[in-house]
Image (cartoon, rainbow, N blue to C red; front, side, top):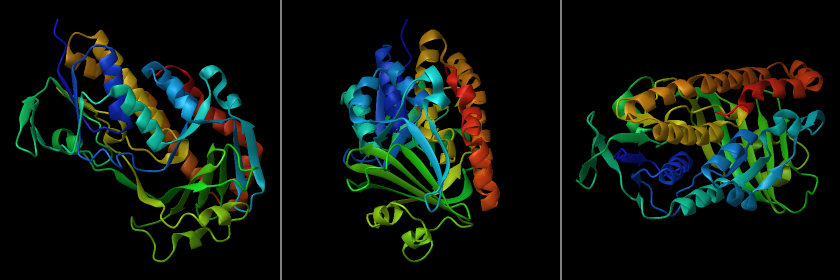
Length: 367
């Protein structure tokens, strides 16, 4: 029986992971990416929780990722001066699910790109329209018809707007800055450490290697634009290694954080995955994990169903509750970080590990 012809729009992490999983199952796949190959992977670093690492094993690239990644064995919560609030080993959160890793986004992208190869991927090619019958027209005037069109084109997904409609992603009231710092001077700066300030301010560091640290900072905001002046002044009262790291943050990657409100990711002949389907608050660090799970689950579902649209319906059903859980936990964690500072600190001192365990417990099961 002929396998469906599939077009994946977007060659980010979710698109490449799906491509690898589908190629391994014998599906004919075309992938298009509007950006040039150089500079494809935006952003800075990624924390890969255990369910993400487990999914990479299913996709077949876990060993390659582990060779480039740094193990994360502890999570530390501190106040903005570095005073401890909670500390625990990540294996107490994840148990037998597996290890947690930290890696740059560019390195994870490179692993997936290498695994896919160049035969199915075209850069500098943009889709201008997608019809209900699967006919896709490109901006160069060419067109082709596919049995399945996959929108893996990010939070501003053109596939979502064209074929799915629904509300645009909602601004979460948070702004963030991300950068990678060269660092060999603070050997105590290990693993994953979140420093919590007043008014929702957070400065997170994740060790990427012996000499690199991923830095993530965010604040509450009523507008989507960066405040005037040097953003680093917003964290001038933070202690410990933060002032030293901020010296390298002048050109940090800035973003206003949004969350998807549409919950329909599948329709006849088309499906959304990753941020195109469900953009998240970064509170749970599950954005990348859910994107990778989407890719593997969609490939498995397509491989076990003879009808594409039946597979898409089952994919939506299989993913809905899990994604909804992550959204709910993100909201709870974002609410907790905005508690009055003394109450927030007391809560984390008494219940930090227990809360993290509860947040992640349902994600121990296979997606």
